[in-house]
Length: 272
Image 1 (cartoon, one colour):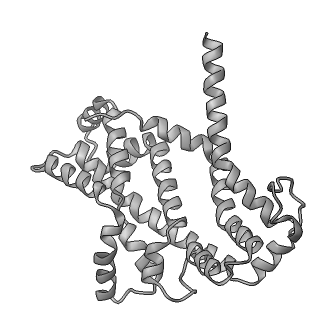
Image 2 (spheres, rainbow, N blue to C red):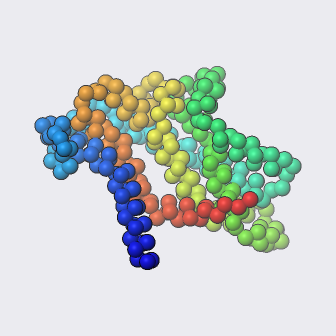
Image 3 (cartoon, helix red, strand yellow):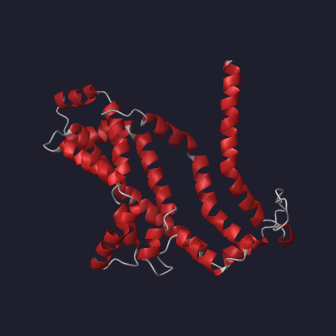
């Protein structure tokens, strides 16, 4: 019975994985097919390995510049967000202060607010600061991650309280305890938060589209949106452009899948 149950779970997981991967695979095959095979029915699932469309699409747009913009924006956002996340989560767990429960409740309330509801207030703020059409405008609104605070706080609650008590007895202050004990024990969770922020920055479209107008500061999703609008009938070119935006994320997940799963398992204990 255990073998049958395991086989059923494996089959269900395989079917679910294929359901997610099939559209990506079809887009990939379409982008490297011969033109006469694009509109055949049933769909052509064996690639012809014709990368001429990739070359034309890449040369006709500033993909590399957009990718570099996205990476710079994402890495800067990660650095700021991790700093604010670590300090906030640490204070909520290890520093007793009046109103701590109210602060935690307010953070959870912010987590419930749809991102679209914050677009107009954020845009007005960036406009008043004269930061519209800059990379900074794409970084500052995401310099604090409420989800990251939630995830890290739950992880810190699973750490033995004796660590903090022993550090206090040895005369270790908050910053020393944070740097020497908390951060090394939280690396998998911090990596997961950083990856979550990176994926969010990579896939961000609405906010950069609102706050930027110059290609010199726009990320890859805005360039992809522009390409989709200009060449809406070029199915092979659209598929190739989609691959430019998708393959880096797939490669990132394959490369760091073990740290990702380790970080998720470390933060799976939901306490408090």
